[in-house]
Length: 166
Image (cartoon, rainbow, N blue to C red; front, side):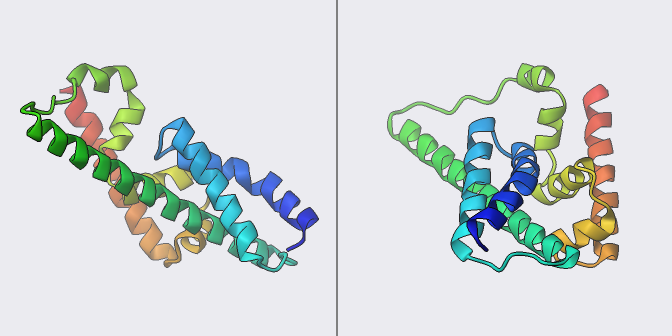
C-alpha cells in the first residue's frame, strides 16, 4: 500500500480504532495502542484494498491487531500489579483494596470494566455501529457466534447493573 492509500486508510480507520481502544484502556494507553495498530498495518505493507470486501478485510485486520495491543496492555498492567504486590510484601505492607466510591464516580465505565474482555469487545463494536455480519468479519467467527456473544454480554451487563442498584 502506497503512502497515499495508507493515508486514506488511516483517516478512515484510525478514529474507529481509537474509539475501540478507549473502551478498554485509559486514554493515553488507548492512543498508544491505536498508533501501534496503524504502525503495524503500515509495516506489514499490505496491498491497497480495491474492493469493498478487501477494505473490510483490512479493517478486520486492524481491529485484530488493536485487540492484540489491548490484550498486551492488560497483561502488562497485570504484571505491574503483581510486581507492586510483591514489592509491598517484601516491604511489609499490604495492598489497599479499591474504594467502592470509585465505582460510583466512574459510573458506566466501571460497570463495563466488570465485564469480561470478550463481552466488552462485542458490546463496543455494537456501540460503534457495526452490524452482526460486520462484527463476525472483525472477530473472525460466524454471525451466529457473534449473536450468542452479544446475547451473553447483554445478559452479563444487565446482571451487573441490577446488582449495582440493589
